[in-house]
Image 1 (cartoon, rainbow, N blue to C red):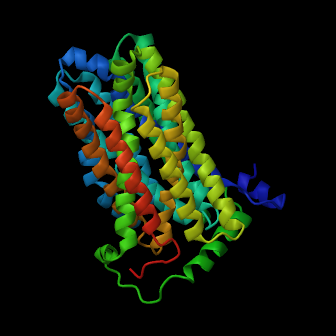
Image 2: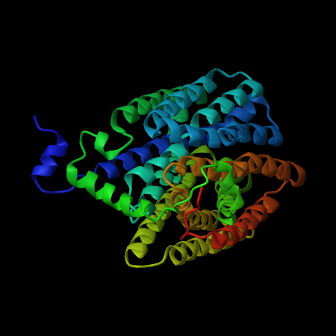
Amino acid sequence: MQSTGRVAAMAGTKSAVRWKIFFLMLCLISINYIDRASLSVAMPLISKEFDLTPTMEGLILSGFFWTYAVMQIPGGMLADKYKPRIVIALATVFWGIFQAAAAVCTNATSLLFTRFGLGAAEAPIYPAGGKLNAIWMTQYERGRGATLLDGGAPLGAALGAIIITWLITMLGSWRLAFVVAGVGTVLAGYVAWRYIRNTPREHPAVNDEEATYIEQAQANEHRTEPANLSGRSLDFFKYRSVWCMALGWMCFNTVFYGLLTWMPNYLHKVHGFDIKQMGGASFIIFFCGFVGELFGGWVGDKWKAAGGSPNKVMRTLFGIAAVIATASIFSVAYVKSDVVTVVLLSSTLFFLRWCGLYWCIPSILGTRNKVGFLGGVMNLGGNIGGISVPLIVGVIVQTTGSYFLALMFFAAAGVGLFICSTLIDYERKLPV
């Protein structure tokens, strides 16, 4: 029987394996965030069982990000050295194991250690995904590739709220829900190993038309790389764009991870939502983020293909996203209506997630052998926000007894996102 690639070639059409790979990456990142969100959804139950204070809740919620952040640059370097396929598959299998292991925890300390393991295992997935984007996508497809990759974050958060809530309700136990989620993740790692390849020519379903199309586009792009490269990764830190990339992603993640980790508790304590209402509201809010992310990627690619300069396209889209997201999250602090609160949080996520286009930046700034490293640097910056925001919000809530200052903190991060995104040069590859 002829392979899919040969059949496509005989028909004279270009196969679309690159899009299938990124649909698979969307699924993997969604699973990634289902596993992350599971603790936030189950936290009211875990907090009661383990008798946790808000500060301890914040410590456990942030524990994931400590090892996740530390492993970002090593994860990117592994993707550069050993290629994305094996890094993505092994990362997925190991984070599934740690997700399931949380089910046997009996106190805050043991739960914290499983979150350390989960963070370390998940760390390479985004830098390796950014590397895949550079290998498989052309210059005018990377916006959609980036937002498919990063779109798994809001989609996984949306589905996680529903799936974990349903599993807890059906199984009558947050522990059993964590086991089911972990086993599903391990199986997804096997699927990733079976389907992902490091280059188009290695994939049995890619026909010659698709491989040639990608290779020609990348050859044109590689001709624009600087001739004299330093070869020293640390030289990236001499450039403003790299610092703004990392700081901008940190501001983005301050808002997103703040909502991911604390929004269920906020809706429960301030608006009186029960676990089913929290699940439904979280699904609506984060699904709006998923739709917004895909919309932003589509607009970015179409605008560039129509002749828009990278600086004009990226600065405009990031600017609009930051302004509207900031205004929306700021307004949440002043409304009492449950419905209006959910609408404003949905608006925040819809526009904020346009910034999934940040995952184009490593391939914009970096030469072909440094994309994984730059992706790790960017996500390290982002996850410094991930480490700090659950702790900061926990302390704010425990100290003031209110979420008002936490919402103001998120709004300030939105302003930082606007400034940093405006200062990046999206038209210059760095000579490193």
